[in-house]
Each structure stands twice: as C-alpha cells, then as structure tokens.
Length: 109
Length: 109
DNA sequence: TTGACACGACACCAAATGGTGTCATACAAT
DNA sequence: ATTGTATGACACCATTTGGTGTCGTGTCAA
Image (tube, rainbow over all chains, first blue to last red; front, side):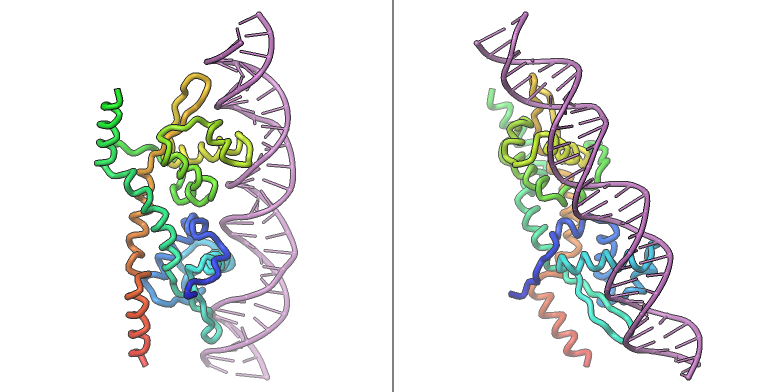
C-alpha cells in the first residue's frame, strides 16, 4: 500500500551515472529545487528535469511545488528491490566461495 | 589485479531484464552453452549472444570454447560494486528511518 | 564425405535514450 | 506595473539499444 505505482524499472533508473549522482545529491540535502540541482551539472535544465522524471517514475524521487520552484526529495525505499536481488548472488562473490568451488572441483575427479 | 578490465558499467549491464535472467540462469548451472541459454528465450540466438557480450564486458560472465559450442559461466564479483553503492543508502529506507523523519518534521514547527 | 549443428561477424532496422532549444506561464521582487 | 526567475511542455535531433536475418566457418556424427 505504501509503495508507489512503479511505472519504471528501478534497475533502469539507477543505470545512468547522472541519475545516480542526482540520488546522491538528494540524499545529502533533504529537499532541493530543480535549479539548484541543475547547477551541479554541465547539461541544461531540461535534461536534468527529464532525469528527475525518470527517478520519480521509479518511485525514487518525490517533488512538491513551493512558490515558483519545484523541490525534490529522495525516496530510497525502491532500492530495496535491488538489494533483495543482490542478496541472492552474495554467496557467489565471497573469497571463501571461490576457494570452496576450487576444492569441490578438485574433489570431483 | 584479479579484477577484469570493466569496459562496461555494471549498473548498465544489470539494467536489462533479459540480462538479469541470464545471470540467474548462469548462477544455477555452473556452465552453459549459448544454444542452451537461447532455448530459454523467445528471441533469437544473435540477440542472446549480444546480451552475453555485454555481460562479459561488465566482467559478469566468462566464456570458453568447447568443441563447436561456447560455454558461459557467471562471475558475480563485479556485483560487489552495486552492493557497495547500495550500502550507503541502506539507512534511508529502514522503517525506523521513516518514523524518525516524521518525528523530526513534526518538531520543526 | 556429406550433412547438420553451433557459432561469430556482419548488415540492417525501429524504437528508445539523452541531449538541445524555444515558448508560455506562474511567481517574486522592485 | 514591470522585469527577472523557475518551471513545464514541446518539438527536435543524433546516438544507442535491442532486436532481426544472412553468410561463412569450424566441428561433430553418420
């Protein structure tokens, strides 16, 4: 119930470096207007706005209008889906796992 | 030294659902030839091969030729980068964090 | 040795992506 | 009342993406 509509795949939303940087900026500032976010990038306002729309579609950003500016804030909870997906593969990349595999393969002969 | 060249962004590699499914297939079978992987999808062999190339460029897959077939295996370790990135935002999506934010906002008035 | 199979390497294409610039409008400040 | 700021909504464009089909080659099996 508390989770939003999820029009856009979260994995897709975080694929772009610009959007990951936006997420980072939003994480440290609680609420930031578009023009202030735009100032952090070399690209134009329209481009940044588009990226924020994508983040909104993935449920990663919320916006509210205050006066003539639109302020954005982070909603990190959709990242949990990524976390859950990753958890399954955790066991495949530990150093111990690598050694274990080698031992098992040696034994198979 | 042990990590590969990383021509491709890992976040980009896992953005596509087909590639995530490929990763899942590779995780459960140790080593799978291309034609066997292709059989799991509705798309053609060329398309699957392209996705596997992208996974290889991200260091997520390894391949070796055996006779006339090319067998693929998973290398999950690049996923650690995603894990590390996520770890920073973990604190933002806990239930406690949501309640804490509400309390702080109430106090601000 | 003759097929059938598995594959890489193209060439090709439609649609999505990531940018740009412009215009109209709402709000702020003077 | 006027001017400048912040934004949304477009139209537009080059490049990338995710698929297709085909051709040539190496390999296995009969």
